[in-house]
Length: 606
Ligand code: M6R
Image (tube, rainbow, N blue to C red; front, side, top):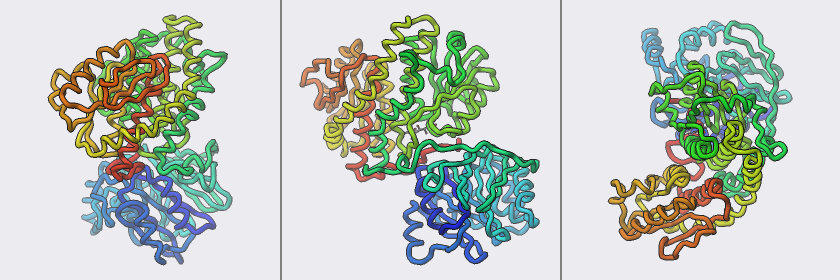
């Protein structure tokens, strides 16, 4: 959720921190702050609202001058977004930035109040800062160890001590943390985009490892003080990937990156015309043997899982259940050692998805994660990982990550179906070659953006919308609806078309636009009947279907026709107009497309 950064080196620290924070704003934007050593003193500047507010505040001569400091961009958990609740928090001795949640902060706070401490903020973080102050004995690492032995919860912490003006300390537990390695400069950050302007080399920090960072030296030790030697990681993308590159918003850029992201993700997994996913360690023999498949994820990633369920069940004839991670983890699911649990996550850090991974492992099931962020917790902790190669996704609304998650679902479905002997090698090759053609088809669909913009102009003043579809189109409707509400704040609901008559159709009036997704030919007639029922009640219908179907002009008010591909592959195309419709509606409403209110990109708390 929150983003933390730290810099020690030779540059203007405040400039580096502000720049790095701007790359992490997708993690939270309720407030921002920095603490920098200036002439041996820690100077803290922080303010409520987006990073821009802090930049404006510091612009008129208030930027602390120094070469070592820490910074934070916040997604509020404890205490409303306010100047006082903004990070960094601290005392005369110490200053900290924190990403995560301290579960026992009330106990710590009461303990410290008894010792005479006063608290300015409502945050859990301030209790850690004050506990560091309380135990500080001149030895930062020993003090950190002592504090960590009393703190329960999740944290990525960046810490500076007033007595050590050239040094940053950092530690994590269940919240991400990396150390960027530069020349005469080093960094800490929650995520790689924060450092990529300065270096592509970094270390992944594990839970309970303590980092001591100066401009020329990096020491990493475990909680018992043992020095660790870590493998240097190298980010294989550059700064352009994390910038808007001429597009008005990251979301628009990321929608346009989908053909490339799709190609890059599937290419290494196709060999001699056949799917090849053994690189992750999962063999055909294993795939043939799993009893049941569970797909568990949150939000958009869960919607990708729904498409996965349809295509895996259709092709491989194995039972697949799809669940929301926050529900699944508490419903005591029947998982056995014979089952495969697939976790889908762009960030690889989503708290609920991670909890399901832990649970599945405890129950002895095999775990396979489909993750975009290299080295993230879910990727590291699962038995097998299939990385998607979307590059950094900055916009909070997920688009290209969903697209590449779909691409992996298809490969997995082909591989499972072939491994289980349900489809022949020829059939498997045929499906795989269609998949390889999809980036070109997505490119064609991108040309429909003006049409989508027009449809958005018809929706922008609505209070509420319905998305309807059957089968795969229902799964798509759910994602289209989520995208719209997430970034345009217009309420919408996705409904299985066949369910309308069981209650929801009473909502349909002239004021309630309906988006019908109707790409599946075997269900087309049925969906068209449902659309007619909606129209008969005054509903204004925009319909997304294949160019091969001859839909009577009277049936829908607006039509979007997609290039002709086999029905099974239609989700890969149909999602694009749904993304565009949400995007342009948000733009027309004047919303902050990339940073919708109340949200953060990476949900690392429950
Ligand atoms: O990082 P993850 O894929 O695990 O995130 C899951 C959801 O939080 C995420 O997909 C969310 O629903 C998106 N912001 C929707 O656009």
